[in-house]
Length: 149
Image 1 (cartoon, one colour):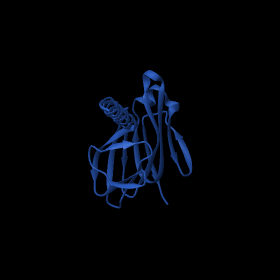
Image 2: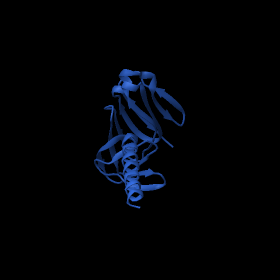
Image 3: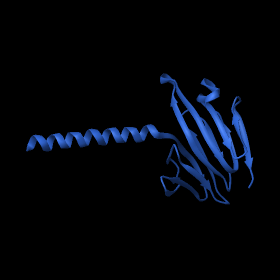
Image 4: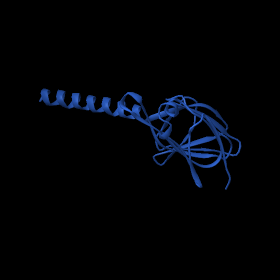
């Protein structure tokens, strides 16, 4: 009986450790600064953005009329969003040793500034900034997008 309990506890700990590591790998970046009310929608849940909060693949980031947010991604890419802006982190991989590089974000509306990081330098074709009316392939270092509607 003790052996079964010990095995169950060890299995649970291994699963918990694996799940924690998997969750860590999903983090694409972090909130560097927040001004005003910014909401991050994650898995159907609305979360108030705070400095230091992790940004995950699939997050929808939405600023209100008087808000702005600054994000820094693990490859040193920077994204700044002005008032009444929305963006989704569609795909993100920064594992240069394994050759897994991708930075794909979908801008829905608002004003967004992007400053490229290491993914753009290592694999420019892996960076895409998508908008409702087109896709921008980044070959430079800075982009400013204003989407109305």
